[in-house]
Image (cartoon, rainbow, N blue to C red):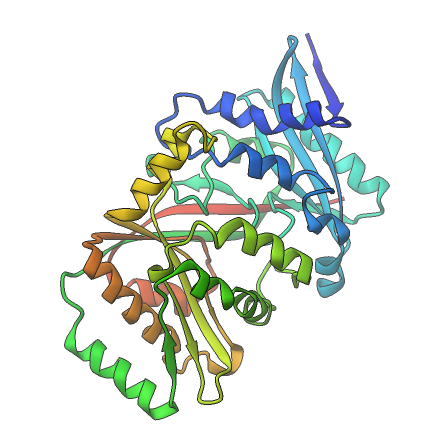
Amino acid sequence: MGVTIQPCNTINDLKKFVQFPYDLYRGNAYWVPPLKADELKAVQAATNPAFQDCDAQFWLALKDGKVAGRVAAIINKPYNAKTGEAMCRVSRIEFVDDKEVSKALLDTAEAWAKEKGMAGIHGPLGFTNLDHQAILIEGFDHLPSIASEYHLPYYKSHFESAGYSKEMDWVEFRLKLEKEIPEKALKLNDMIQKRYSLKVLHFNTKNEMKEHAPRVLKLLNTAFGELFSFAEMSEGLQRFYIDKYFNVLNPEFVKLIEDKDANLIGFIISLPSLSQAMQKAKGKLLPFGWYHISNALKKPKVVDLLLTGIHPDWQAQGVSAILITELQKVMQRYGVEYVETTGMIETNEKAINHWKNYDHIQHKRKRCFRKMF
């Protein structure tokens, strides 16, 4: 029996779209399920302000009467305006190991993109850089952070068989923390702060931290402006991500830094690893998901580095080193042993070389593919 492609036109269709990876990865020791409620909000225009700047469509693939795959196609208009390319984003694609299914899904997304006047398609990419992006191509036996992705090993060959080639890779590291911060690093930290009259902001409560959240998202727009796949986020999108992420952060693991005029010039946002807790929660906060997440925040052995941003005028001035050192002090106090970085674009040599100064492994690689029509 052949593959049938069904557009997601109703809320029930979108619920099936969201549900599919939970079925596909059931029993997989490495997949980290996101919260289903968050995933459903992300694919609806009524609850995701990204739709104000993006066109999007979602489809399911049916085979033998069962859902066998899913795909979304997104046109991010601000990003296309930034790059001058008419590109569509293939997004949220998942499928069983059947090239008839994956081909039907990609063909459908490509046909939609052509109808919209696009010159090509790339991805997987999401609505924004804080959304799902890329396919895991190395590191299948490592648990991802909640801000990363997991896929099955056959995905890469399916994309290549469909005529897609590499556009960009992200790499991830696992770092082993030393029990003591080197004295040299502490002295350098103090010297840079005094030289430029910088001030590090520390937080003990979520309310204190959340007061600064709009400043962080504003700086993120500036710091990430030239990065691959990034498009400036509107105020509505910034509020969306503040509401989504800042409520779960442990404020002690968030550090900001200001210049002498109290301008925000850098931030680092980390989080005690929730990967195992999210596996136990199985995509739901109730009845016991909140309990597993709450426990994971209290006694972490692993911390995930989610976001680091430095104002372009302050890059290569030692600001990131200050933030990392201040964060490391907190991690030492909590007894953290390992740090997981999220994906860094492989061309970001400064950041990659920095992490190589630690006892590390580069254990994961994710890829964005590209196909021109």
